[in-house]
Image 1: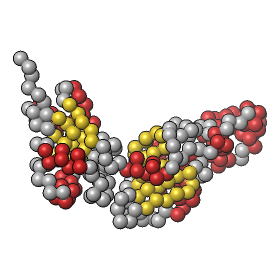
Image 2: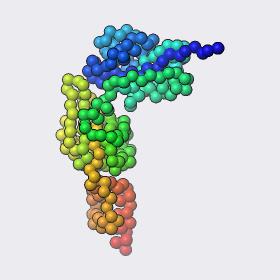
Image 3: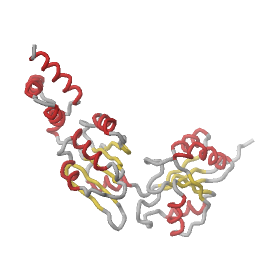
Length: 279
């Protein structure tokens, strides 16, 4: 006996601001599916009403993801097609949906992603920096974890792409400058496609100090490749001489920025040198 066909799970990109930034195909699919799973039904209702779409909606967010995924898989296996949308941009890009996608794959359900608006891609195209590009999503919320995470990308010779929230942007920029270096080029994008769209360009140092104290809206950060001089490894003799001349941890921070070497390693070697000199 031939098994009954399942429904299709559509991953539909929605506007990141301007409600006109949605494809004709996406509008057709949103009208044709049996159900639209929304990160926030109240938010999505504005988009659907604007385009006169009356398809039923259901909430799908991180806190109910495990429970809701099972319900949606059941409906998909029953032959109903479902569209998954986030509040803005492509679903699953720092948004809920991973559980549903994994379960759908396991169940043999067809998955169809529909292209459209994407804040990271829009900001990257505005930056002018080329590949390779590393997508970091949101950085860890705590300073120590954030700096530790950034250390892994310190000497990576490409572009870094990430999100940040308004209440953490100042602290994150300070950590980015501390770890990656003050002269690292950056583009900060905010309110993209909206009335007050803003792009700030400069270095981590200049942009951090020019950022308004109370900025609203989610930020997309594009950090350009490091200057070639910032990742040139010093000779062992030169490094030893600079460590011996260091007077404080501030000197070590500066040395870490200039050489791309982990600050923890420099501190350990500095302590060893000081121990030998004090014998």
